[in-house]
Image 1 (cartoon, helix red, strand yellow):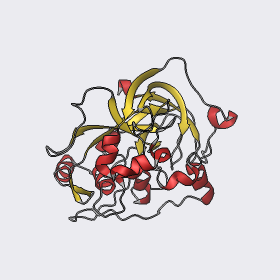
Image 2 (cartoon, one colour; image 1 turned 180 degrees about the vertical axis):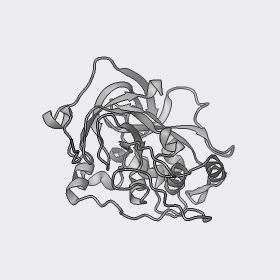
Image 3 (spheres, one colour; image 1 turned 60 degrees about the horizontal axis):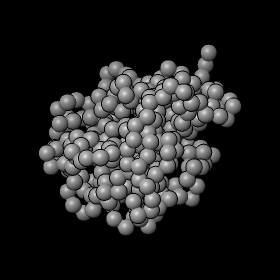
Image 4 (cartoon, helix red, strand yellow; image 1 turned 120 degrees about the vertical axis):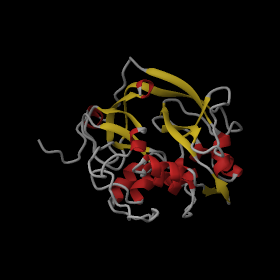
Length: 283
């Protein structure tokens, strides 16, 4: 049977959400300090709606640092710190955090990854040594980013079956699902099916040049951003895509494998609803 990319899961067929009674939760907090460390401290407080964590968004936690000069929140007491708005990493500069991360996830060997992790990017005009981002869970209770605007504690879904919005690439039942940044699509890191390309120039340091190799229609963009409407310029969460393995330098990298969050339980096209079985607690 051929697959044309259209979603045929329960969520798309009935316009409802799949939710199981057997589910595993954890608690966390939206970290204003992490947001403020990457941008003007007034940005979050002045744009309350853009940085508020809302239901079904992917929460990313900051784990171990790649470099001894990096920042780690692992030693802080209390609830684990997370963020949901990834636009904070993209300053549109050629050496910003987002481009550093795009190159990191595209590293094809341990030696290459080690060499890249020894380099810094530029954040707020200064050298910044990034740390690892990991899948903390799916948001199931809203929370504010700044404690001055309200409660920052939230509940995360880390185990069970749930319906969320798919990302740019079609997903089929049984696919392993990973999270990704939309900027990786714009940088041309994947082909039209979501397979990572082997596009590195030999003996040259990779440069990230943003392009649009898999253009999406105006209607697809509307579906992608409908949750945030006119606020989508300052609000961009991480999305999900199939984690596709390959051979001869193609396919998912080791860093991609660390971003797997579960398995698809239905088919879905670009930015359609999809049923997935989350298993962060077992990964």
